[in-house]
Image 1 (cartoon, one colour):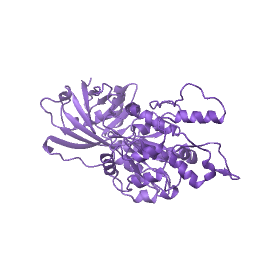
Image 2: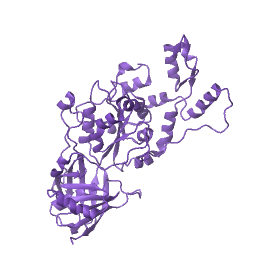
Image 3: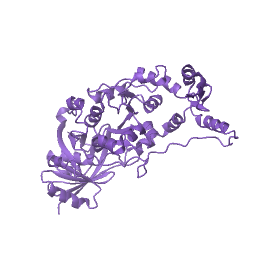
Image 4: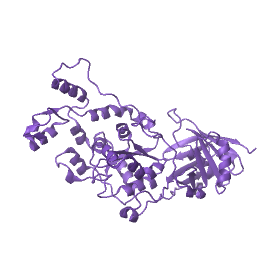
Amino acid sequence: MLRDGEPVATATVLSHPEQLTRLRRACPPAARTAVLAGDPCFDRLLAALPHRDDFRRALDVAPGQRLIVVNSTWGPRSLFGDSDDILPWLLDSLTRELPVDGYRRCAVLHPNIWHGHGPGQVRAWLRNAEYAGLTVVPPLGPWRQVLAAADAVIGDHGSVTYYAAAIGTPVLLGAFPAQDLDPASPVAELGRTAPRLRPYEPLLPQLDKLLAGHRPDRYAQLTALASSAPGASAGLLRRTFYDLMDLSEPSPPAYLPHLLAPAYGAEPTALPPVTPLRAPLQVLTHLRDRRPTAPPEITVTRYADVGPGPFAHSDRSATAPLSEPPSAPAPADQAALQVASHTAIHEDAPDSTRLPLADLVLHHSQPEPAAWTRDAMRRHRHCAMAACVTAPDTCLVRVPDGSLVTLTAAPGPDGRRDRCDPAVYASALYAWYERGRPLEDLLDGLTVVTGDAAHHLRVTLTPPG
């Protein structure tokens, strides 16, 4: 911070007096240039929190789903670094243990990771996880909105993880090199208070415990240390800039632009479009017998199975036990519950050798969906059904006798369209048909349950002809 004994900077902007205390101790000459001006990034996050539901809808997080964000700063001892090499296990566990319809997953990586390794290499490392539903936020993408929308963050000693704790989000530390930090810093305090990820142990119970035991004010001390002037940094910074230029400050109030809902599109900073799950899916279905006054109810739980990933060469990932999907529950009314499983695979799955294992073949947005289902049944004679998602809330399914079944979800309780992946509806229909139940019995409706959400379907049957 010094050159020839004098400060390099004319003004050194700090967000809190505790930083000034440490600066005076570490470099007294530089402390003369200190300006307390809050934290504009933290201010924008605070202003965004009331819009959390808007961000979750834009990220396609459905009611009842949990959004898990994996965050890494850069450096060899970061979560994305190679000193402990737990990332292969973590990506595998996020894919295999977390039901795809109960959880959404996002990755926020420091721009230096992208620039240091190159986008192609980073994408190669994450490709299998993306096939299984991981959304990777671009280097300059809407990471603040993702953070505001998150239910939990698995991170390290980077600022994004600290911000997550400061806004009251549950945090699980996957890496934390205390030796790289000032012990008196707030980030070091986060490392002393936040729970640690236990690598190579089942991940889902750790997340359940984290969420069940979290209090929004758990990190109140860290919130207070994030900024000494919450909501005021825009004015403080502008005043500093105009003083440095020896100019009069404009009269209109200074402000920071509001964070907009994350956009999908071709812009480099936009999120990649939500793409169909292209990993093979192992599907558990629980069918309850019809109750006299209610339509049949089928619970569908899907797990991605991506097979060996790009880290398979790692000694630790090769020897670590893989997490298996949990077995079906055993409720008290087991007699009324029929449990079965099947395999659903997208026709465009990267590994086409898995397609002969499919009981249900999937596709999305075909121009002639009925024709595609007919052709798919011919191409994949081993499968029992072919299903094409034709709209965000609709799926068309061809069954073995040639009948076409259209499954359309009613709007949710909030009046918005159902945000479940319509391919789930096809798995529910498969469970019903494979048990020998008549399709005509669904014409009064079908309820499909994923996680904590119930989806009420309208069923239309077109006989073969």
